[in-house]
Amino acid sequence: MREPDGFRDFVADESPRPLRAARLLTHDWHAAEDLVQNALVRALPRWAGIEHPGAWVRRTMLREYLAGRERRWTGEVPTGSLPERGSPDSDADVRLVLLRALAQLPRQQRAVVVLRYFDDQTEAATATLLGCSVGTVKTHASRALAALQAQPALASLHALEGLS
Image (cartoon, rainbow, N blue to C red; front, side):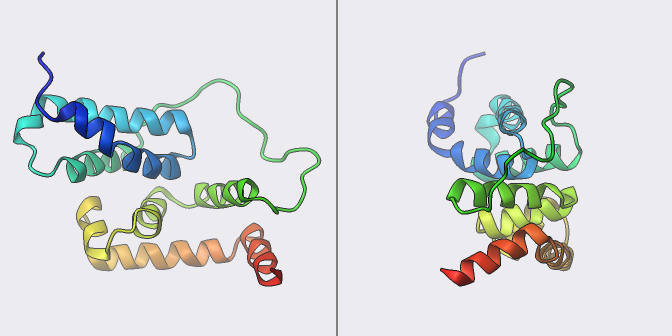
């Protein structure tokens, strides 16, 4: 199959954004790459008929994620606690705490949080991408934020932030 015009440029220019969202959704770099790659593979034969490729790829990626079809790792599983763990004082530690907190959310809530607060989508755009109503987006966002606020690791981050 011959590569359609503009596809390579789209992948080079636009793939970092869905890859970042996929990473936040899956909590796994390799699964995130697979999710984006699968969406791009599905876009390739339809490329000429896709009017808004960024939205199409993002929607396809989200549908696959919500259906739970991303690649499952069956090898080693890292431990939940690491030895000699200090307080989160570096940006990397803060990111890890946030990623772990996001991983605790149900898929739908995690998708809403990633789209609304990390991908900067409106409630209406998030609802369109997820194929649900704006009210459902608001409900998921509210429940997700309440769950995140209740997590002790995030509360300690907030307390540390107040000291600086």
